Length: 485
Image 1 (spheres, helix red, strand yellow):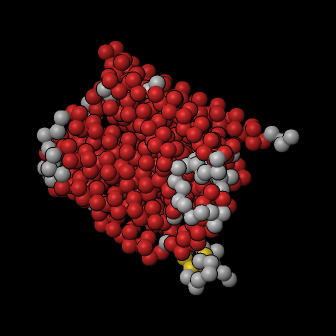
Image 2 (cartoon, helix red, strand yellow):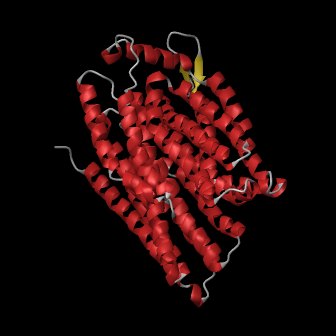
């Protein structure tokens, strides 16, 4: 019996195992997420060890996220055109080198430069993950692959802060944070070696040559649409930077963002009409499953991305709970999220959209129950009951993420998988950045009225965003059920 996971490279005797490919691409994905979340634990020791200012510390967080956000779509397009395996390795090499530079950084400035390069590296290889899943998996197999994608995300969020805290605890605050960056080097080198051994680079070369054989690239000229790339990068930068820099002068960039998006769309359409190959095929937004899935997840991220930050501020500053206890409260959330991302596989292909609706409803319930625990504090309800309410959110997040990722990419052609994955991740990153700024802003704006009032206001805002995502999901589910005219 033929193993469906073994795929032969056309025109050669070489085969590749798609599960091995999946295991390699998910390993760096975990590192990229750990690098985003786990550094929070290291910030106090970095501030102490490098004598960093509050601005320096802020950029240790924001520089990585900003670089990641502006790199995703151009990198996804480059992978689609030049070969996803090649660009995956390029991004991974950059990430590993930057991790070494971060660990060795003698000054806050050089650490932030390293973090920006690290973010660019992650932004280059991350969209190749969704692109390669889209290319080498289909049907129920693709649903299982995206479930593993969700499992890795949940596990990374759970393990990252705990691992970083353990390293700092073992090696001391002065140098422990450096080893929190060094830990990525052996993992990254292993992934590079396995990628070079297991990736089907011949398939990528054949696909690239076939694409160059007709259409705009028939002359052999490589078309990466540099003008479109620059316009979209500037638009994303103008939208994300003010929410991350928190400087008064940056807010003038916000009005420029919609203008740049408008210019980019006009350019892409005219470029395609002239026979060029635009960076983003506007036909992607014609796929209802992709468009609606992206809107639902982007809206959901406006709320939930800041939920743990607000919770940590409330528990630590408002109730005096120790940092390690706050981390443990969120651990069941991550564990259950990992479980539900795999559990949802059996329902995604047949009942995926109703599942998304139910999970967003469960998410809203979890947020409101967490709010109830905070309001009942004066009556003696212990704060650690939040572990139970957060577990509801974790289950919902895992199942939602797996189902939404699978259904969003369901109709996207494989040749646009990296670009589509980059667009979806960028929308989610922008949603997270905007949501963090708004929800945390609400929290701090209400702190003078009391910590419980501040938490209530912030979590009501989170609930509103989740409900908005729920409404969009209901509309999508009804559109999907409606008979085609």
